[in-house]
Figure 1 (spheres, rainbow, N blue to C red):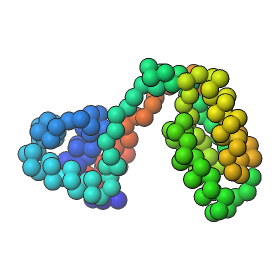
Figure 2 (figure 1 turned 90 degrees about the horizontal axis):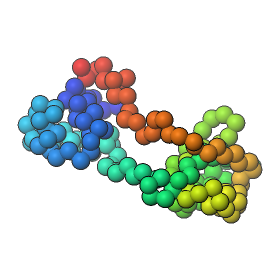
Figure 3 (figure 1 turned 180 degrees about the horizontal axis):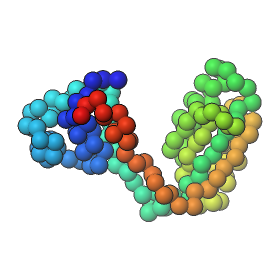
Length: 161
């Protein structure tokens, strides 16, 4: 991990709350000059601590009213079958997240669809036909209680205080 001080953590906290802050506004919030803040921000980006900047869209308001968590188990385990599965999943825009996990399944996917009929079609025509899929289980999200929350920087910030 890159050595971070309290100003670096302040910058990261502020950006997690609002990534649209101008350099001037960010520098005011963290009590640094705009040039110092800009240099630190460039260093944090170069170190890979900041992956990018994104807008969070509301899927429901955009007509993507179904969100599902789908667990998938592969028939065989190995580098070749995993690579083939990874490549196939990357080509599915309905899959907004995909993680290799421990437990009963091999992968956990977050999938969005306009409605249940479209989700069902996607499962049957796309997910079930992916190479190497042995088992698939899905759970429809009824309500997102906590979604894309900021990382708990206090767990790692003790060194920078």
